[in-house]
Amino acid sequence: MITLNYTAFGDQVRGAQHVKNKSKCQDKFKIEKIDDALIIAVADGHGSSKCKYSDEGAQLAVNVFCDIIASLVKQHSGRMDELYSYLSRNKAESLPKKIVQVWKDTVEKNHQKKSNEVEIDLTFYGTTLLGFLITESFCFALQLGDGDILCVNSGGQTTPFIETDKILGTETYSISSEKAWENVIIEMRNQATDEFPVLFIISTDGFANSFVSDEEFMKTGADYLELLKEYGENEIKDNLKNWLNETTQNGSGDDITLVLIYDKMRIRLWEKFFWPDCEGSYW
Amino acid sequence: MAGNLKRPGGELASRPLHFIWMVDCSGSMHGDKIQSLNYAIRQTIPDMKKAADDNPNAQLLIRALKFSTGAQWVTASPISIDDFDWNDIEAGGVTDMGKAFELVAEQLKIPPMSERALPPVLVLLSDGQPTDDYKKGLTALQNLPWGKKAVKIAISIGQDSDDNVLCEFTGNKELVLQANNPQTLVKMIKWASTVAKQVSAPNSNPSANGPAEIDISNVPSASDDGDVW
Image (cartoon, rainbow over all chains, first blue to last red; front, side, top):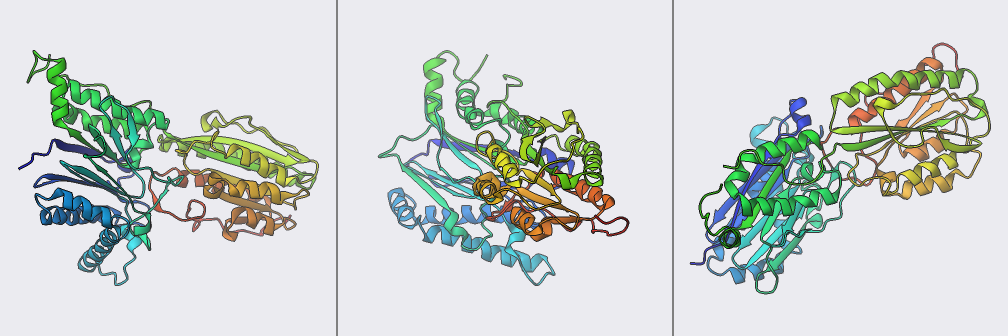
């Protein structure tokens, strides 16, 4: 049995404007550990008046992504190299199509159960989707719409894991649109050939939009890495909601979800190397 | 326990929202029209300040330009609505609308515009027909990424304005608002100023190729009561 070195945690807050307007949080996220893999999904329901059930659409999107990827992980249990090959072969078309189609089918079923409205407009449930899978040998990231997946190397250098063509303003690609799968971007990295980042950060667009510039946003990568090294996961968890609240209040006013995925072995090695007398405690 | 740690990441800021008045002050605007326009824009300031106070997550920045023989910025740079004041403008000259489009296009480039801004709002007020080659400036504006996403509203003052040109600017005839008398002009200018509040909401929409969508169901009806221009 190979042990996965990566672990993940995250939190979310309702946007300052949504609190003020008494509207729901439209962000949803899910972290699942299946066998020797970690699956993360983050979705940001559009929230505008014509997307009246987008919080539900976001929840269904994270469920669909996690279910599909979990099923693939189970089918390839102990054979992650085969899963890598499968995902590489299908990332361009059939996998994005499947995720979008299953989401649409699930939304239709959900709508029939809950509503007297005969007609369904998928836009009601419109959402973005960020999906991530990490195993001991590769990582896989999917993006449909806005939001960010950043990667941070051991020196703190932070770069986008997926480069997207950002749409200006408040519009975004949506899983609800026709041929939504065409707007899916997938990036994969194999540990055998590529250096694996020590930290990944997944966030909804309310986070990046809260910083005065891209440069200020990118500083989060090195800062979170330093905090992990110096204080560890629990200290970050204790503070994360407060930080996200401060960010939405002084920034975009939008809902914010932030998930950190990091290599706990490399962080522990760093602790032992730099703080050899302080294992298990901090001063 | 380390207690309260400092928030990771750099400097935070609300998102800028640029609102631009583009005012025709050609000779035909002389008299009642320019007086009503000056009065109406000044009247919008308290409501716009209140709207900005209600949403501290959007930084409402105002600019105004005037065009007649040539075009020039009335406010040299974008200023916070809190510091904005309206100084009456006077009418005289021809209608170089194309020059106005060119000035706005220069300011909607990235930079000086930021990619993280909210969609800008452009409000064009005119009572006449362009006397210059307006197509060149309009095309420059429409070809910019922010030019495409900007909410563009035109207020057609009186019965002599060229609504086809205004419609070319807005890309939507429903956003060409007719004002044939002082009362209606004030109502239309007030409504246009409220669009800033709509655009400042952080909610998203599925992508479309055109400008940011706004709700136009509450546009005041054009009234021909009273004096007609």
